[in-house]
Amino acid sequence: AEIVDKGSTSCGASGALYTLICCVVGCGWLYSCFYRSKMRQQYGLKGNGCTDCLLHCCCESCTLSQEYRELKQRGFDMIIGWHGNVEQRSRK
Image (tube, rainbow, N blue to C red; front, side, top):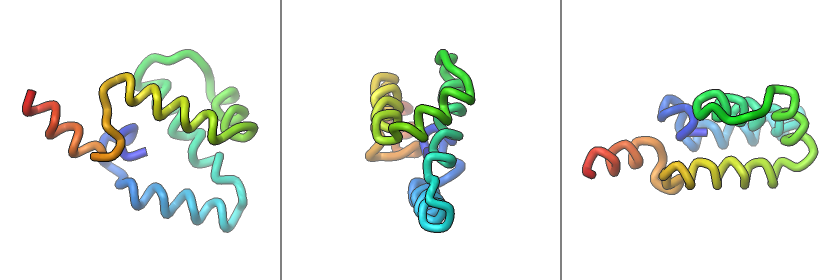
């Protein structure tokens, strides 16, 4: 979420909000499908909002893994977050 938001939302804040939604509503996938749609728009990936939500609802772990691999393939290191990736790329 931090990388897709380009650092405007921290990893901790996104994780806390996801956990809160899971505990209160029981549908954390509602939050994570928003990021799939956002990532799709940023990188021009195929799909639409309806399939984004259906995929997250039916198999969230699979879709999160797919999104992780997409960002990794684009050269991002999720461990260091957005700011770490920006810093790393500016050194090259």
